[in-house]
Length: 147
Image (cartoon, rainbow, N blue to C red; front, top):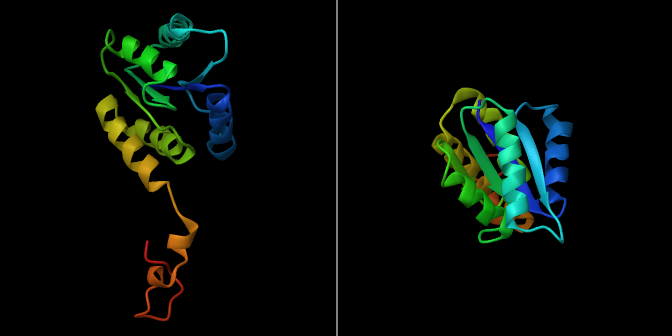
């Protein structure tokens, strides 16, 4: 199974993982890394490597908050030296839930990256677009939305 590491500035990663536990229950090979004031890139790399070394996983996918931020940059340094690993930015709850589900069916990190990307994007919904007159199919009597 592929190891997942959620890494963000502050405690967002911890709470995102906790939220998924509320929805799906406990998950194996799922860790979070916080990046707090006073820490630097080397601290993140050490945290990442400690997590990777404690598992006999088939790869690692980092789900981080911001492109170019310290959690991203440190993860890229680890990925550059490790096989079957990658980093994707813009972590959100739909992304993590879908990746947790999809990793049961693959040991290829690149496949999980596509799941993460698609579910992250598709998880974004805008109320005014969902419930506008254009979103409702006028051709039938159902109340279903045209999503």
